[in-house]
Amino acid sequence: MSIGRRACLAAGAGLFLAPGLARAGGQIEEPLADAVRTALSSAVANSAPPEPQFATTEARLHYLRWLGTMSNRLRRRKADLEVRREFLQTDIVLVGILLYALLGKLADLFAKALERWWLRWHPGYQGT
Image (tube, rainbow, N blue to C red; front, side, top):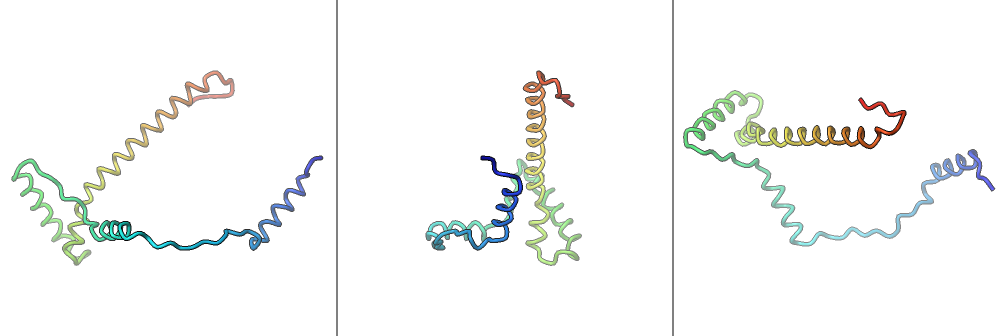
């Protein structure tokens, strides 16, 4: 016996139109453990970007001069000093973003090479 296309569509429409039939069961919100709550709250409260490390005092002074100059330029747009400092330390985040982009590109190239190697036998495959 074969189930027809119309029967499948009718069954799907019936499920779509009757969402009250679905039951998720008895669900209870469980409170977080004290250790987890403390760890999460400290992670959120301590969200300042990491301080950069410098090999020489001259490099640190150069960075602090730059930070002061740029902070003064941003004073009109961002009034709070701490917000300006965190905004100006995005170079640390930028390195992470660039690293993820590089790893993504390498993974893409690797996947394309595997695709070409695995599908080279298929007559319909035109690896580009």
